[in-house]
Image 1 (tube, rainbow, N blue to C red):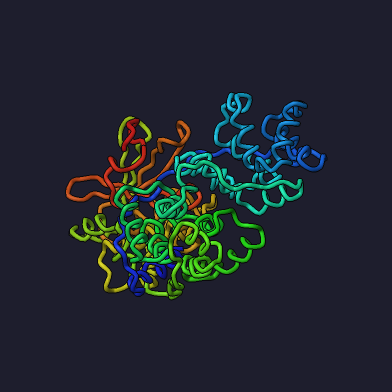
Image 2: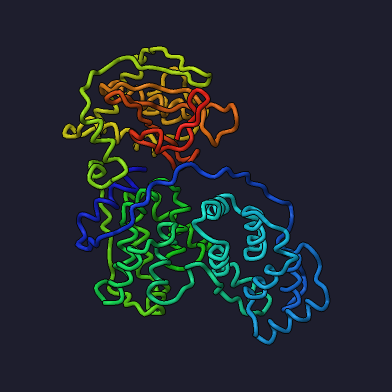
Length: 493
């Protein structure tokens, strides 16, 4: 929810006196990677043998999909029993051999191997999608994911069952680097999902080295940055909790912990604050700071408060340019909107009347949510974010009353959420059109609806997006800055 994820969290930055320059301004993730989820009917527990023999047999079965050879078994058992290698190191070395690497596993196949080996089970869909997306987008390397899996309670329990040392460190692009720079890179990767930029890395490392800020203050800077908070507003609670476990504890959540935190944030106005305040003082995070030569520092708190949604116009850089452009338009409120089919080689235009039920739904929405002090551009921006965060992706939406579906029933697909946005833009007085076409990543011939708004003879995209179809949307953006809308057979952007 917009109010839950961003209102309290972003406004808190204005209240707490820990406002550091934050040189991270990455944009919002656009479309999701296509994902086909499958469950194999196989048992992750590959061997009934005990001790090191059982552990090695299990690795062979799960990773190489065959029984062990006697020479290999004796070698790896000697390594484990002599405590010359940990369980993680054995898995790494076995999977670095040509027999495994020649399989050329894709990210989906590789993750399924990790789930079998490290969790002794098939993947759950939510967790699988979380890791799959970050691997596909290059936000994490395979070694980064492997480190997180090896730090899990499930892996510790499996290794304990076989009487071997679990291990928990592996060569990684950034996560396991030691020292202050490694600590900063961990924050970038775990919190923002990307590698540190050179200026940002230097800024944080210099301030931590000099003692100008503590480890907890650095974490505060990352978790209250616009880059993180906008991202947090577009992911579900499970993935949000995973981010905090990853950064502060260096592992995936255990079942009891995940249940506790999901319950804790279920009705919170500011779940980011609840999670930060709970995780930042953990002994694990304080130990991580000290391990890297950083003073953890005293408690730092994000106030858990409910504030007016007007906050967004001060903080959301993603909307600023669009709001400014819309505020310069001379408004002519309308009870009609344009509809354009661009699935053929030409644009086919028609003008449609906004149904009376939709006009009433828009008026009720405006009376409920719009502050009288807001400009028209701010009202449009708020409507886009409200629809994006409050609609359930559902096939029951009406094709005749878009605003009722989106603003009242809160159910629908692209036609409903973008249709409601076009109706609201026209009601405010803008020249807007509902476009029927397709998107570049959709299957050939598939259909999509989005908005166009016309300002000073130029065409801009307004795409509400939805939390099921992906964490992507656009607000008064030229096609050149969007991702592959198809107009009259031409790929735009």
